[in-house]
Image (cartoon, rainbow, N blue to C red):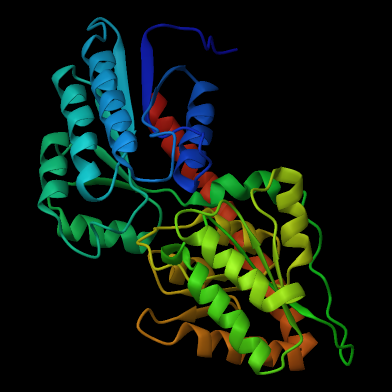
Length: 370
């Protein structure tokens, strides 16, 4: 059996670790655990400990980045080191650049994990500088084929890339979720739509509430369920909507694993009208493996995720509320159509998981050097 305590190769994983709970932090934590099962691991936690981008957040993050650079620069030269760092977006790319530069100075192998389209929708000089400093031997981890293609087209120094879908994370749930609820033709009941996220306008809260209000105006038998942490203006928006909509809307707050399973079990359709440049949101994958059809904006890798299913992709410039209500109305009239969508959604999720599991295995092998 392989000796996991050997000291001749150390992998350093730098990125946000929970808390707070967020998609990227969850992914970094689980990736680190996968690596730790194969070789010695050091964690550099870059979390700002809050989702509010306050002065405290930025000061804390900067101090953690400096401490991370110190850890990397103090590495023993006699030991092989690999640095796997999650890339920030926006000005946070400068933090990533400091860490990568430290790794290059101490001859670390470099892996950079990309989870945002913020520098793919628009080419950024900061990302060009990062890819230049990382060098052509660095491996850039992207979460879908479209993202990899666009990234390598924009940033010529990023010669090495590897596609690893986030769907590997949902593999653990694929054998535990229940079969899709069958909608019996002719039996009318309330259609339940849900949103699980960090609840704020940019992440789709306002569009979700607008869709629910419009559906009520259209006299659809509908109910909305919100779950997750209310961030910024989100709390006031939720309170106002609860007062206005009464028992048509339910807010469940932050969910543990058992409560999350119940959330997906009790909804029929998952809405995700996020306007943020997210690459491959975990909540979409979670909804799909739970056989819940998704209605989402065409952002990041969403088109690739929900292809070959009966999920709904709304062009970013189009009216999300109108298109969502049109499909919700159709599913209300035809329970069979909704059941078909549920089954095709689960089938697509299973396909994504199978591909991602193999992609993850290849990534871990490259990181640990086998």
